[in-house]
Structures are given as structure tokens and as C-alpha cells.
Image (cartoon, rainbow, N blue to C red):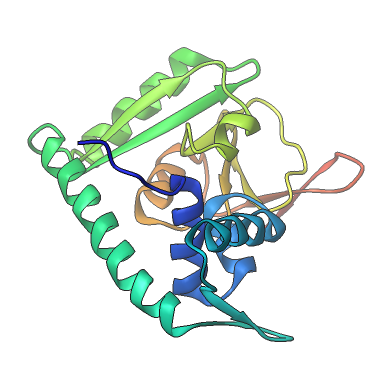
Length: 204
């Protein structure tokens, strides 16, 4: 059977915006701009032929049609998530996809990732090299490790023993990323922020 479905990106944008009741917060979560979320939602509304949100001056509110649609979309996403979990190898609950960009000491990184796997046996890791901000924005990788830090609006950049860990603000504090950050960091929290000029400043 062939299913007539709206674009998945539009459904993800709608679900995130409906959950947060904010295009801005949905954008942080999905690693895109608020304008992109709004555009995806408008495309979905045009395709469905109904309004899903009432757009007020300082917020968005679900319409009755939006509330009904959200319940079904959440159930569908839940089924997909459950099917994905059941497909994973036994004992693995999370697959963390790590992108690597720039010159890195890969032997040192692999050693640290091996320790991460020992400390977090229910996490699996996969490395893609090279990978950059483009892959991070498209969701092809979960986090990015770079040899040098840059200014990436909407992302958190942490100094590591060997390079910098970059994660979207929407997922930067999720348990698997926090565990990876703790394992890879040479010392306790020193969050790297990059000035407009490109220089690095460490703040405790």
C-alpha cells in the first residue's frame, strides 16, 4: 500500500512547535531557524487545507484542528520511535552519531570514546569523518567534534581535551550528549564561547 503523507520535515516542525507552543523553541530543538519552522508549518497547513495554529502577537495557539491532528501525529511518532528501539541490538538503548571535522588526534579520540563506551555500555557510538555543521544541521550527526572553535549561533561549544564539542542548543543537555561531554572533557566545566572576532574565551 502506498501512503499519501505530508513531508516528514513539516510534520516534525508542527509537532515540535505544538509541543512548545513556540516556533522559536521548536527551531532550537530542530537545529533550524524560527522562520524555517514557520514556513514548514504553513506548507503543511496549505497541504491539509486547514489552519493548525492561531498566530497571536506574542505566541501561537493550536486550533481545534491542530489539537486533533497533534494527538494522531504524536501517536504515529511514538510508534516509529518504539519500532526503532526494538530494532536496536540487545543492550543498546542509544546510538550517538559523532561527526569529526578538522585535524584531530584520532588515536586519542578513539581511546576516549572507548572509555565512554565502558562507562556507558548502553550507548553505542558511530563516527563520521569528515563531517561539519551542514551535517549537524540536517540531523545526519548528533554532535560535532572540531579541532578549532568557531562562532555557531544556536549551538553550544565546549572545550575538550582534544578539540571542541559542538551541539545544537536544543539537544546540548540531553543525557547522552552530557555523558559524552563529561567523558571527553579534560577538566570540569569550562564552556567555550567564541567571540565575534573568532577568539576563544573560557568561562567557568
